[in-house]
Length: 454
Image (tube, rainbow, N blue to C red; front, side):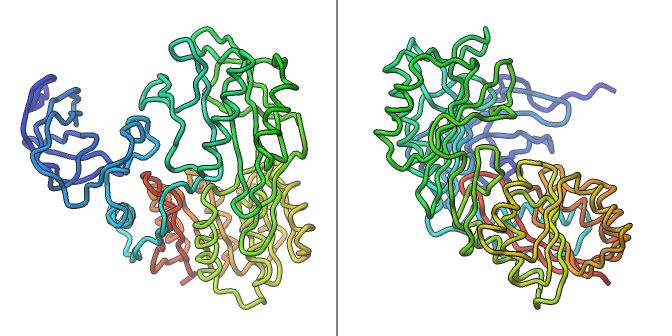
């Protein structure tokens, strides 16, 4: 029998918002058929226009709100939600923290996991926190502009204040944009793969205030390049590094595989928990420096180190977690797939005078198996995987190696729930999860979970 939805496209209805999805969309139901709605909060009644009807769910938009949720707040610029910069910007910050706690609880319930989720650790000032920006450059109404794409499109919305970025980064982007305009540099034309400048990337050290500018271009040659470099250095005295990355082909990848130095150094410095790190254009480095320190303190506490333990830090990047753990452990082994990141990690260990660490390049699951076969006796394993979570072969290696404690740093509740359920089959048990709000005003959730071997 053919399914017939209880609503039709372009139908106007009145409904009450019941819940939020993990992406922050409001949920209303018509005869148990869910409609997902932007800028709608639980408890709000609204007149809706149905915009899309599918087999299992549909979408609608708000024509008129009949009442406001007590958790609703006004954003200073509607572009922040239209572009996806601040998808939770209409929700009060205390309610955002509860929302993130609830998302983890929902995942655990779905996976039949009995794990307590603690209240989310938030920020005193939950905006202007990002220490890195990657901003597209396009031609809009005949003028080179920087901004952000409208959601689900490649239509650039010109913006100068990005709200969640370090204000000094916003200021730097405007200065570089104006120099590009001054020297008539053609902006990238995505449809025809023409033009010169594709994106501007800026990194700024929160503690050091050092700044790096990366010009991401379609062509190797950039007209008036020396004048642009001189202008940046004159107007932004904290810039210690200007780099270029060439991306010649049509792609959604922002940064090319290699970068070329145009001015100064190839890295900037910053600090985490008293350690200094070199951060290059290609380095993975947490974007929220204040919350990173809270996250790493949570990891250190969850590891229960006494100074006698051997620790593996999987997905170790440039060594930020490894070096933070080193002074609390006997020895730390880091494994990381990126060759450049391993070189950075070794240099960072040397800079900080830390000798009880070793970094190895390779796939985490492969190196773990090698260490297992070498009968490396590991007390604590710290994992900080990408959004896809842990590979099945990695979990198998953990099950055979049997570290007494696993500390799982997650950026994706869905894969965290899946992986904990798999680790349970090898005798691991988690009592609680501590969410840390690394990305205020967005739906992204970071958390720390300690698992012990039964």
